[in-house]
Image (cartoon, rainbow, N blue to C red; front, side):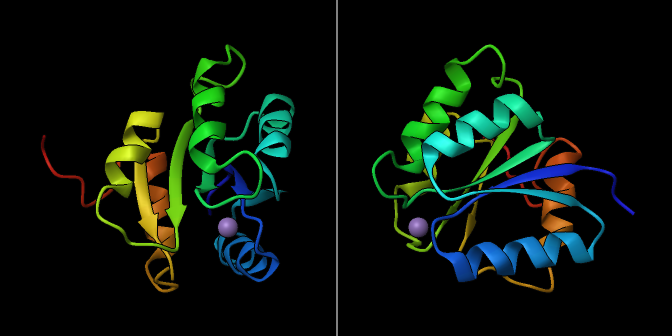
Length: 131
Ligand code: MN
């Protein structure tokens, strides 16, 4: 079982619970935030192994929250993986520019999700392509 802590940032409570349940079912420990500001505060305090960041958040969006995490000495070494409902062209590029290590499109594939997360924890997405 994984002994890793994941910070899930998602303002939609149903999605937050779905993602958290999936991760916990695979042995990850989960910390939850529903806003960018809460995510930054929790990342500093909890030092998670990975952050899953919804890009569509009210007030501070996920891109801005990621930029701030990457500029913060306490959190800049934590990988951030973007989650977005809109599989829009350009989202992945924007996410990477903000400092995200990768990107997962919603709705998430519940069967493959834990494997994809493990791949990110091992240093990159399992399907990463060469640049
Ligand atoms: Mn959202």
